[in-house]
Length: 347
Image 1 (cartoon, rainbow, N blue to C red):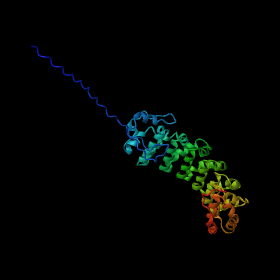
Image 2 (image 1 turned 120 degrees about the vertical axis):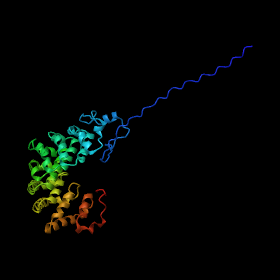
Image 3 (image 1 turned 120 degrees about the horizontal axis):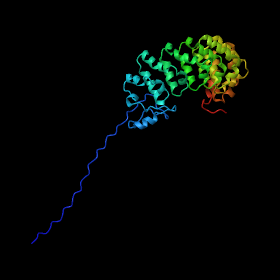
Image 4 (image 1 turned 30 degrees about the vertical axis):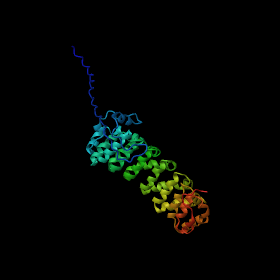
């Protein structure tokens, strides 16, 4: 008799081969040594892709860093940092991230020769860099780290633009910074032609929102002759300038830095206008001039000024900056004990 058939065993399905996922390649991290801010991240993420690096490095000037390799972008050594930007300093200066790398490379330089080799690439681009939102930082960096004689090419390129070039930069949002750094760091004889151009428009620059900072630098770092020339220009209009939100800062700086004779000259001009001292004392952009004036007055002039302020104590105490002036006069310390804080609002 035939044997009964055994039931068929179910066929086991073949397991598909496991695919090995490739390990993603991480882009190197750019370490930024500058403080972070809400608008500028201090460091890229370690998982940032190469495409995001490329897209983030395009500046408002339309330039891109897509042609740069990771080795060029993120050089691990100071020497590598310098070598990676050689020949491309001006191009990088026009980019937000690029200008930072140039500054880092300047910091990594160990000799004047290395710094000069990088600065040489800015020859012919000074005027544009001075007005560039990114390049101006690199130009400022060069001015502060180079020896004064090595900054001469910067002075020459500005002067070659004409007699008004210095005053044009002084009015510029970024250019004013370059003028300030030059006045602070180059020799006085190097800056003489630029200062001459600034003095030709002294009153207009003193009233300007950016120019006033440059004129303050002339008073802080200029020669005695330049300081005196500026004082002689300021004195006839000192009363008007004292009430100007920008020019008043120039007057206050003059009262701190010029010669004693020139200080008295300016003080006489300010005190000749009745009521000006009290008017200046009540406002934000005038009270510093009042305090600077009181510091240089002596004898009868000081006594007369303090008397006028004391007689108007109640009026001045209603104003925030008036209270600052009152507290700045030692002779009124007892009267000031009950004054509200400077943060209290004006009446």
